[in-house]
Every structure is written in C-alpha cells, then in structure tokens.
Image 1 (tube, each protein chain N blue to C red):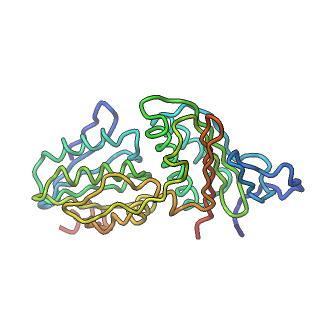
Image 2: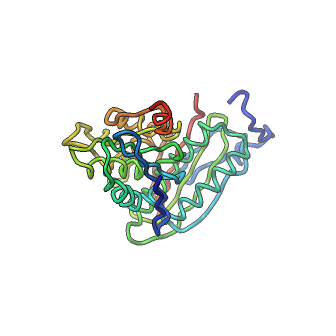
Length: 172
Length: 120
C-alpha cells in the first residue's frame, strides 16, 4: 500500500498480538494491533445502513482512497444483507463486525448467531443467467460481488456462531 | 419537474426530455433497506407518459445487489413496449453493473438527461 496516507505505526508488535480472526485466520500482519473499526449490533436493514455510514466515516479518516472505501462498503453491505436476510430471516440477532488495517488490504471478520451457511461452506455461485427478455435475474449477485472484491474468504461454524473472515485487497 | 417524496423517504423526480420520461433518483443510496420502496416509487412515477424511461442515477453513490435487483425489477415492470435506460452512473454504481455483467442489459447514457435537454 505504498503512498497511502494510512499511518498506523509500524510498531514492533509481536506475533502474539497479531490480529487473528475468530475463523482462525492469522492475517500475518503486525501493523494493525488494534482494529480500525469494531461494532456489535442487531441485524436489520436500517442498522446495516447506519453501521456502514459509521464505517465509511472511520475508513475515510484513516486515509483510504475512494475506490477502497466503496469496495469495503459494498462487500460489507452484501455480507450484512446476507446475515439479515438469510442467516436470521424474519428474526434478528447479534452481529459482530471487526475491520483490521493490513498491509495488503482490509481484514474483515463478521460473526452472527443465525443459521449456518448451506453445507457449511462459503457459496461460490455462477453468475445467474442473463438473457433478456426471458432471463433477467433480480437476485443471486451478492456472493458473486463478494468473491470479485475479496481474497482469503473463510468460514467456520463456531458453536452457535457463524464466523466469516475475508480480506479486501487495496484497489489498483 | 414533478417531485414526489414517498412516505418511506424514497425521493424521486420526473421530467420529460423529448419523448423520454426521465426519472431522477434524488436519494444517494439504493440498498436493501429501500429496495422494495424504490421499486414501487419508480413504478408509480413511470405511470406518466414517455418512452424510453431514463433512470437518472447521477445522485446515487451507493447501490448494492438488492438495489440492482430493484432496478431490474423496474425494467420488467415496464414490459416489452417501454425501454428502461440508465444515465449518470457514478463510479461505485457503475462497478456493480460491471461486476454482475448487468451493464450488458441496459443502454447506459454517460450524460445526465439535463445535458440531453440542453442540446435539444
């Protein structure tokens, strides 16, 4: 991330305090001992909006470029929408979001207590068939968008919790 | 320009530019929180005459997959006789259309409809 205005000090943080996600992902990066953003809330569309607004404000203060900001906002919107709509459905429940500043992007960990992902794996759907006028999909894009904009996507069921972690690489 | 602010807060304005009906989204976000309301609001506004219907998204700086689905739903609601075209995509919105390849489905004008009007 050369030339970026991110100035989290490159302090001598030992491996013991490396950010380790709840899904067991060691980002292998010692530059962000404290999360850039951390928030617990109850899953709901309107809450997602409010949390994303706060997230964008904080990331903007940290000096992220407009491209990096919009990628983070979009990816986390899709993840949080999935949790509200599919993991919890008509109910709601707790969501925990943590974003770490890494050399190679933003490390994000999202946890919830809703239904587990189907088959216990991160979905990797094909893009829905687009063939107008008969086939004009109105959904099925969320995981495709997430996969396009992320790396190191991992999922684990940890007791009652779903733990999803992913990295949003810096935009070119 | 006719302006409607629905109870739910989805803010939309319409105007005629030549034969087209321009539907301008005044809000900055089309996301899961407003996708259904957005679809209904545009459907109501699009009862005014004009073809094609040009959805002016120049004020919209955030669109997620739910918002994209709502735009596609509007296209279907208009039916085969009335085209839905788009204009004024900001970079974050254009990215969503590109990543999902839905940019291949819509005629996308780079200029906002006000510019169309200015040039006659």
